Image (cartoon, rainbow, N blue to C red; front, side):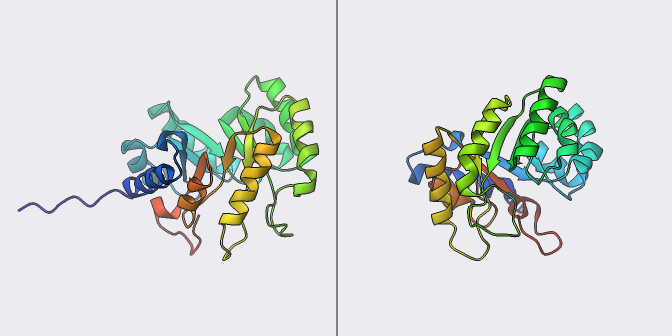
Length: 226
């Protein structure tokens, strides 16, 4: 008797997204799973590509530039998302490489991205990162500064797709997800980039359109889950 093939981690995550979406009366197809491939080599990414995953998230422009050109040549329909903090001097490289930028968090970066988009001729979707828990050590604009940052982003020609957040660790994330969803509604935005391996199902029930899942797909690396 042949042993059954163990389910791929991707199947479990997609099932969790689908179940959570249905609980909330949403369509699972309205949620984009971003596989967080930061720090993982191409040989760890290929099995996910083979299984059909097409949206991937990277933290650093330089790392993505080193490993994704050959992968995208083989899988041209891949969507690449920059989910880490971006230095303004890397804006042009990011605009040229990524299809979405998830951590737009300050006026200087907005200005740099606007100039880069005009120069490069590409306009990746942008998510404004909100420091939803008012944590000093985290990136993201203060809630009180969001309206001004949004106005600046729109004025600079950035295609603002929505808002992004990372809730405080070791605290129930649902209130923070709900707050981000309210801020987005108030701003007339529909995109919500929120939820990681430990809480993506909660995020989906509260309206996430993009979840950023790493360790549930690749396994924990260096003791840090994403």
